[in-house]
Length: 625
Image (tube, rainbow, N blue to C red; front, side, top):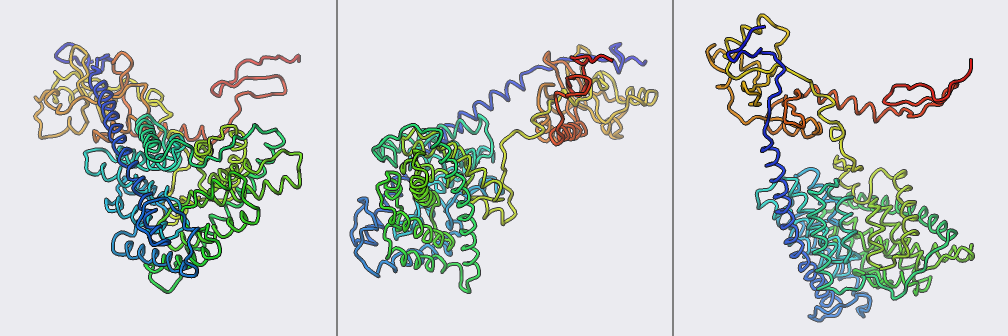
């Protein structure tokens, strides 16, 4: 075989070294970026905590002006108004203002906020218009303050997300980091309103981030903790829906009943989700411009509010009263039905407001009805009305949104009823199960699904994450010494055509890895035959560890605009190379493994045989012939 200038065969299997400074520098930089994004998340959460308090003040201020004619930010309830039939006009006037704001400001203020945030994350690199930062809370305050049957949580989640996105657009950060800031702002807002940081973290995972990794969870967790601290400072330390009583542990019989309640609530959550979008479709068919729809919906809200004033406004006190089990049954029934009608019409009209508080109210009321029915049909079951209300509240949210873990943790954190963990787990599991099999999309995703946007429904790593480079790489490869010339290499390759490839590994005579060389560079007529290979190196050497995933290899290829990359082993020695064909082969093999089930233990007629990696071992039990 032809020798190069250093006396080393051109195709010898060298073991050149590659220093790990670049890999270590990248790891160190990632950690610094994580600290930076975490700091920004805490800053955003601090700001959104005070914005949440200002939003509540603004809602109270508009409520007092609209229903009582007083300029005050004191907490007040529209249900105590004495306006008579004039109450019908107030929600309609609020809806008219929101329609004008949406028409002349931004159409994005319509709706309850979470689907819009999901859409920006999935399709627009988490970029939300900065105007949403002030238009959304203002429009929501007008909607709720004039009697809209919504909670403050949806608007503050949308506002927090917009604030995080806006800051992310001002700074030099990646779109994934901007997604984290959006989720941090949104969930910090939820934590600031409800004092539920753990539930807020899982809301981010289940509805916004669609991933579970340190780079996203740490900033979001810090933001939610900050939001919870803001809640304790600005709103108080008691649970939002504190009833003053502690629930007792439940029996197995009662647990079965609560599971059945979860199934029933799951079925109703499917019906409710269908009706929400049916009403929205009905508004789409109206022969008037969409700007007028919120005013039309407001008329319905005011009309219902005349007969049942408790349906007006936020109604967090309604949830607390339902959970206490102190409301008369006829009141619970009317509140459940009329609150649903008021909310579904208002939401379908495209006004600004949230879904969480109405879902909790309706679910809690249905839980009370289910608990009352069980007490009369199966009195020995030991079902209590307050527990049934709590179970119904959480199951409704789990079924409608399929935010399973969020629903359970939210119910625990906002009530302090930690003995309810088993009933909540049973009921939410049942509701989620029913919703998953009967409903393709949820109340959060149906709107964006109609626009052709697919929402991730699983959080497992992708297939390329599960395959290591070592499993698919091509070992060896032609290693060329940089002291050789283009003429030497081409002459040798003409005599040894079997060694020709698309890419070659370059090393020095002492074994140091220096980079990759393409076949196109070798045959480029612009370089004279006397050109040494070292003169063709113009970039830093690129390599991936053999232990890296194919996803990391693909990221390196994309970043460096190459379809092949060198592979190094634990000792920083060249182990081979990986190209796009290897990536596709690894993807196909692992896809086939996941789609085709095969037993690990096979019971055969002649004995028990173990299957290890598809190969049968000797039978453990030999049968006599």
